[in-house]
Image 1 (cartoon, rainbow, N blue to C red):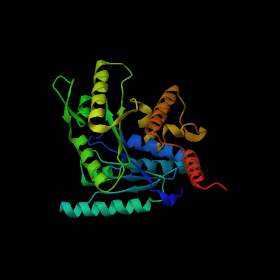
Image 2 (cartoon, helix red, strand yellow):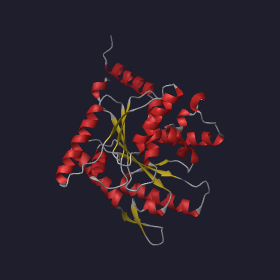
Image 3 (tube, rainbow, N blue to C red):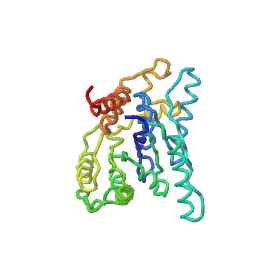
Image 4 (cartoon, one colour):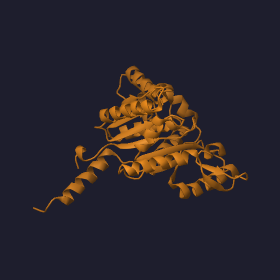
Length: 289
């Protein structure tokens, strides 16, 4: 299989609520894919806040200070249109997105970070998703974006605003012949205690998964290390380097395992594995000599 036979696999980080961990998850996904030998592009659709963009700026500065290369994606920030007309704004957003995708066409993966709001640019990003990852904090407030809960907090009444938006983008994607979106919800900031609230939310998420069509994957426990690494543009996957300037602790081991568990749950493979599979496919298709 040659690069011209396929387009980049698009991974979208989406949630209409800020502070759920979209950018943190995006950073670790990008760096993990880079470490695995993939060509990676990234798009920041929340360029006004610019968390993902600033992270890569920090990473570039750290690499210069360390005098060693740190893998970086081909990054494109997109500011949403400020046009007064909604129709004009949508056309401008679509044009910017099309230009970004063309610029990143040689990549194996494109990771898109979306804003914590329902915008036309965010909806466009969701339509492009081959894999949609929705981080949620372990709270009924975050759960409310996926499904309406009864007053006792024990039953799903109906899908909520974000789940309905994803459903609309799934339909739009299907109209244009796109493959179904693999929607993954990850539970971030899990308490280490097996509290009743944690169990209740887990049960409700399992019910929602069957009802609106997503699968669950492990996320990140609330760890200070994720916030500590942001100013340097590093991730837990960089800390094996002796020149990282960060003292290695046992808590880092547990946090890095969370990252690897998430990668495994998503189903991303090293570039060498993908290449071997492609070569085997081509070999199987060739006639015997």
